[in-house]
Image (cartoon, rainbow, N blue to C red):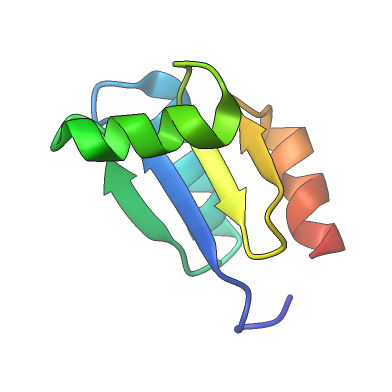
Length: 82
């Protein structure tokens, strides 16, 4: 995977799925920007505008695609394709 791939993960510390997705990204050695939706309403609104729903994590990729609450397998598949 290219180091130039930009990924943003919108999540919250209390969210088990967010922690799981972060663990996958960390385990794969993927650099990403973490945005805590609990810190600001703007961050939560941004995640909602990307996915169209309030669920987290929302993972935004450089190509403009996103995943919401992905399984580990779905996230790894997307990373491999990037």
